[in-house]
Length: 275
Image (cartoon, rainbow, N blue to C red; front, side, top):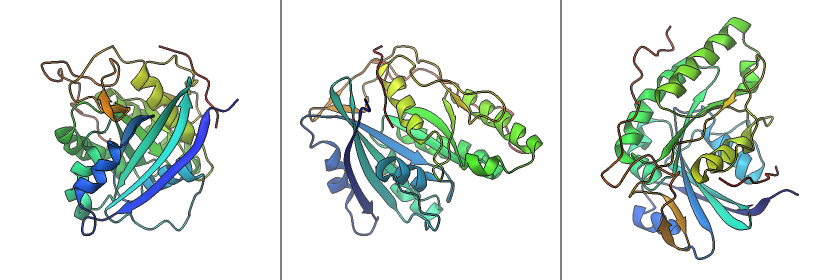
């Protein structure tokens, strides 16, 4: 039986009309659900809004315009009898939206680093997005997500293999799961959020790994138990610390493998999931 429920909410925010204080209050007024805030960052037109809308509203708009400011949507699921609400925040990829990056990244439990599988330069830009996001939130778990997998399949085989190779190296550099998806089809859309739950709550790895040629890459490993004072999974209106939901300790986050080195594009409990 599918365990995803159909509780959804959408808001569109702008720096000019919405005070940050009133927006963040949305995250605290909960009494019966566990809240998982997800921050989505990446260059313009990589597929952030499409992924969010496909997951939350089961829609896809080929004429999607550039995001101005911040988009915010929610979707609730039921996990082993517990309601879990994804609060998903999508920021525009242009530099004029970066002033709102703290609004998106602060208190996030998961950080989705999105790039366009058909535009290698958007993967190279991930290093800058990751650096800025990590400066604001050192505890959020990173996830590297390549969008437009359906269009990648139209590229020459050599280019496909090169993208897979470089993306794997980027994911390893930031200790992040790697997922290729296509909101237009859709492919691996719900799996992105299933892997988030698996990683945050230490669930049994119920999502099969995909690594064979021609398959949309889906690779993740279980994190080592840890804790963090800035844990960002909220329950019953209060912050709740989960051992597997962050990378830090009581004395602050430990060193991470956040160095990209020579990576360059130029060169728990088992749970059933329903769609």
